[in-house]
Every structure is written in C-alpha cells, then in structure tokens.
Length: 380
Image 1 (cartoon, rainbow, N blue to C red):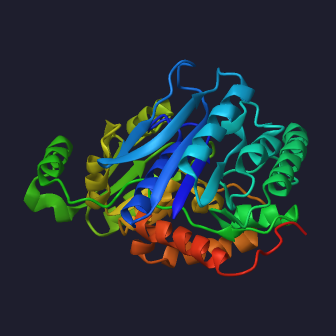
Image 2: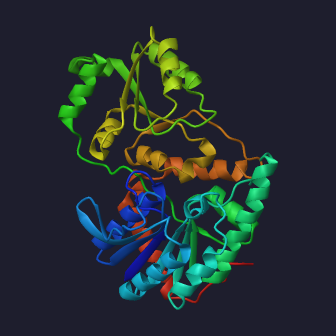
Image 3: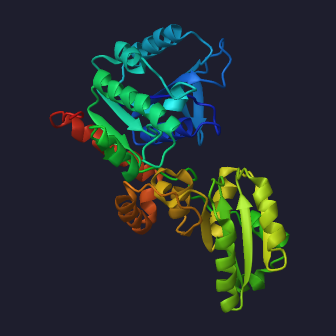
C-alpha cells in the first residue's frame, strides 16, 4: 500500500502530531509499504522553502512541507500536485484544529481537502477535537467548542472517510456525542525502548552520589515531560518519601525532558532538600531518555489521569514497564466513570503493545480490513 499522511507541521521535536506522523510513516515503510507526508500549515518553515525528505532513525521519508505564510490556495494546489505524483492508496489526515489554524478554527479545511483527495479512501485520526467538552468549561471554551465541533463534522461530511479513529476513550465519547463514530487507535510511546547506556547510567549515579553497591538502598522516582496546571508533586513526593522511609531507603527524584515550570521544581527542591536527593537533567537525546526510564523504580505523570490515553509520555513509561504515579486529576463529570474504567485497562495493557511497531500494525490492519468490507456510515 501507498499511504500519504497529512498533518499541520513537520518541525522535528516542536510538533507532536508531526513527530507522530513521521514515526508512523517509518514503521509503515519498515513493514514493506510506502509512506509520505504533507505538512500543510508549517509555521516553522520559510515560505520559499519546501523540504522534500526527512529521516526517522536513519530511514528516509518523502515529505512536502508547506509554509503557513504561503497563501492557502497555493498550498492546496501544491499539495494536490504532490498527491497526483504520489498516487496514494490511502490518505490519513492527522487532525488537530490548532495545528491547521492558530485560533483552532480551520473553516473550509474539509472543502479544500475534498478538492485534492476525491476518489482516494481517507482515514481521519482525531488527535484533538474541540474545547468546552464539559459543563465545567468556561463559557468562552463552550462557544469556541461549538464552532470547532461543526468544523469537525464538516470535515467528516466532506471527506467521507472509510475509517475514523482517535487515541483514547474520552475523545471517542466526545465524538460520539456529536454523532461521529470513531474507533480507538492508541498512541505509541514517543520514546523507543533502546539498549541501556551503562556509561551514561553510571554518570547519573555519580551525579546523585549513589555508589553501585548502594543502589538497592534507594528508591528512584522520576518526572519526564511537562508539568501541567494542577499537578500536585508535593503530595506525591511526600507520599513516596514516607514509603521509602518505612523500608529504610532513601528517596531520589529526577526530572528530565522539557519540564517547563522550573520555578516549581526549585520550590520542591528547597522544600525537601533535607529529605530527598534532587536532580534536573534537562532535555536529553531519545536513547538517553530510554536509559533514564530504565533507571527509575517509578515514574510520575504530570498529565491528569483522565488524559493518560492521549499522552505519548505515559505510553513511554508503560513501554518501559514502569509503575506510573498519578499527580494530577482534572474532573470531567460527564465522562469520569467510563474514563476511569478505560484507564484501568490501559494500566494492565502489556508493555509491548505501547510500541510503534504494534500500533502501526494495528493501523495497517484497519486499512486492510476496511478494504475487505463495506463502508460503515460515520455520521448518525
């Protein structure tokens, strides 16, 4: 099969959906198929540049990056020419409203894409949908969400996709509420499981003041990724400190990755300086992040539990067989019970099912099975 992914941007490390499309493309190619990508609204690209090739783990992927500063009509013409050149068997739209329009209102996207995809089977992956999904949402979000939901329905009506997916149960329920039927294609880990770098691991232990023969006397917990509003790290660290103390062990807290909120980290470090050893390693290459995840005894999620299903960081922790400590909660009363049940399933999901290979195979099977049976209506 020849699969063409369409996403907003392909600036490596700066756009999660673009990184997802690139990694998915490389796995599709490794499975013996063809894959290419169009970035239709790339805010990181000069208008006179059009990157043609990107790489994922050494594998070349054919791409077309179109700057957001080019006129929209010109971008659609260029994208249409690329599609005619590639002649894909499937088009997979990786949808996130704020990626395609800075205010999250990409009016006309469905009509524009219909012009250049007619006759080609389509798949839509809803990475994000709309804001204002709960009665607790601010009025402004509810108004924005009303229009964003109409855009999503229009996208489905115009493209008439054979397959619609989203990454988690919450989004599936919200889509169903607007009469859009979607399956779940879980996210894969944004960090591959790689061989442990013993030299790097030893350097981390030295930085923490832990001798090799003392490792068993420590409980090492870590935060990878961003801190979200409402993340109660203080309670989590206090609880883990008391738990380690009860078995005569010392607690070590390591932050790594682009955590943001550095002032919160410094505040915690000062508060627990006499009880817990702290280290902030900052951003690391993927291989070193994998090693760090293998060094931890437990991982802390800065993502609210209701949103675990849309977190590539949570997926990375599960791929690396870690117990995940919840430090944030964001109630969505209309859906809390069903989300909780789904998260119980996620916590028990085998580690290998969080890999890119497993998820890409699920995706390819969806395409094959869809070709083998009649199209199911997506709007009710």
